[in-house]
Amino acid sequence: VGGRPRTPGDRPIVLPMHGDEMTAATPGPPPATGAWRPGDPPGRRQFVTLFDQPENPLRLELGGTLSPVVVAYETWGELDRPRGNAVLVAHALTGDSHAAGAAGPGHITPGWWEALIGPGKFVDTDRWWVICPNTLGGCQGTTGPSSAGPDGPGGAAWGSRFPVITIRDQVAAEAALADQLGIDRWAAVIGGSMGGMRALEWAVSYPDRVARVVALACGAAATAEQIALCAVQARAIRADPDYAGGDYYELASGGPVAGLGLARRIGQISYRSEIELDTRFGRRPEGDEQPLARGRYSVESYLDHHADKLARRFDPNSYLVLSRAMDHHDVGRDRGGVAAALSRVRAAATVIAIDSDRLYPPRLQHELASLLPGRPDVRVVHSIYGHDAFLIEADQVGAHIATALHEGGSG
Image 1 (cartoon, rainbow, N blue to C red):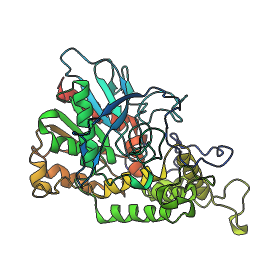
Image 2 (cartoon, rainbow, N blue to C red):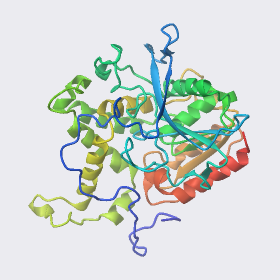
Image 3 (spheres, helix red, strand yellow):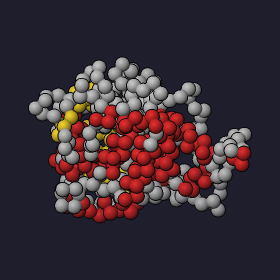
Image 4 (cartoon, rainbow, N blue to C red):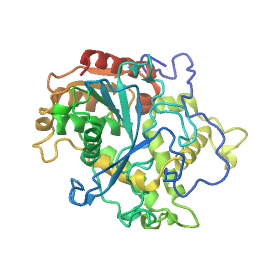
């Protein structure tokens, strides 16, 4: 679907499913956690251990430290001899390092930007060396709440003991990863949603290490509504009797799957647009179910499907930790405000908005662009899909990114 969002008065719309097909749920209840854990198939992941010297831990913005920090990442393409063609791709809240590639052992789903990254694609791996790390606090190989805690291998998971982290802490871990890999300067840092927050933090925190920044569907600071939506989702997880204060990993009864599912349902509504949901589902019942006789409407089944799907590949504690990091997102904190912080950016900036995004509405991208050096134009993705269009509208999003990379040269 391209062009402006259509209304019910326009001709009928046929909406492709784009990876969220209404398939039957996987048999059996979800596990206590969908986290990747040592002993699981690694898939395409590579691992590096950082901050492993007790005298040099990762010092967290809000206090406390982490040591060691394991980072899982995946790469595509080849790093050139000057190390000038490196592109960092930052994933969103429930994403991971598997930005491209097939599903298979170690990867329950195909790459979330499979249509964008690869030979001859928008992010052309014949030209660029692309790296996507699983973020700090995540659950797919990088240190997070489901990882072995401070007791070391064989001990209990971090669970409730995992510290509060911020977007800046995530970027600090990525900077250490870049150091380890010998990347002094990124040709580009690209991300959408939470990934866009990290891209902005890279440009502000390390202005000399980023040649171009591409930020999609995000703002310079979290808004009250975004924090409110995260707060309700967090309450849903913590209210689950099986949450056990965050230490549920070894419980025989399983973890807070119901709470995580409710959180996902709330989030999923905000990720899509009202017109898409109404066009796609309307008031249709789910199959032979009768809503007037306690059956479900089709849109309810859609939310149930996403709840089950997430529980099989994600960790409730990571959902809480990363959502809270997004709440704390504010590039202007302790930097004299947003305008002063953005004035530090030296990277060429590309800002991309989605016209139907109700979670990160276009006004936030226009405010961001107005404060960046050079006041770049906001590039608009026209879509019916809402916030999720940064994952769905591959042709539009990819074209904007390819243009940004072309304008940025070799870095």
